[in-house]
Image (cartoon, rainbow, N blue to C red; front, top):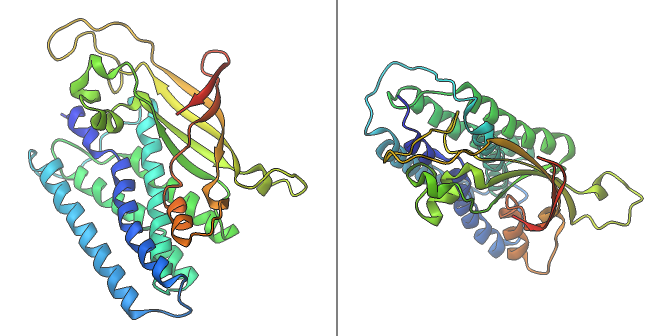
Length: 311
């Protein structure tokens, strides 16, 4: 049987954190060298390969120890989790695969490899890494590979690769924001007992966004390109994956909460169009472009509601 409390430890948002740390190393190198080379740089290829190999191997070892060591190895199998958490976890997979492609592409291109090869080698990194975790899930008695996860991973990677190949830039960028919900205290063993745990485990507080700049589509507009419009999706009222239990792990009666989806419209800062005099800061902004900044927001889940500052 799947352990939902442990399942949260596989939050795909953790992949973004790891990839961002690797990307910062590449950014630091780029700040010193200021630009992509015109041809393949052997030293950069060796350095990048070493970092990628070490990072990926370390991640696999950690996964094997933390996620799978408590379960038996069984025949490869799937399980259906598509109805859990009102699909919030699937948006997390898509976001992780997308930024795995973003960071992978920029890292490979930094080594001097051609645009096309950088796109296919680096752009598919996020999907490849997440595919590896799905395979390991499939052989674990406590887990199981998920068709829904695979589809979400493919959509996230496809969004990046298609836009980069077609437009040479990202017109639509997925983003992430989080707020602490009131629900974690009712099932802290599942939704998190600390602020760090809740950020990763409490799907009630996660919102996934798609940001674009109207100025990219309306040539005559005087709107600045850094001003983005963002549509968001979230869910609330969830104390369990598919349904809310009547009792917590200690046998105490839980209050009733209605599970429902939430939809948002907000403004955002499009980091791709923010330019400063600092090469490092410009690169840093691109590196944290998955973060949706707090901003005035309208929600549509149960009538219109305005938030002066939503995050």
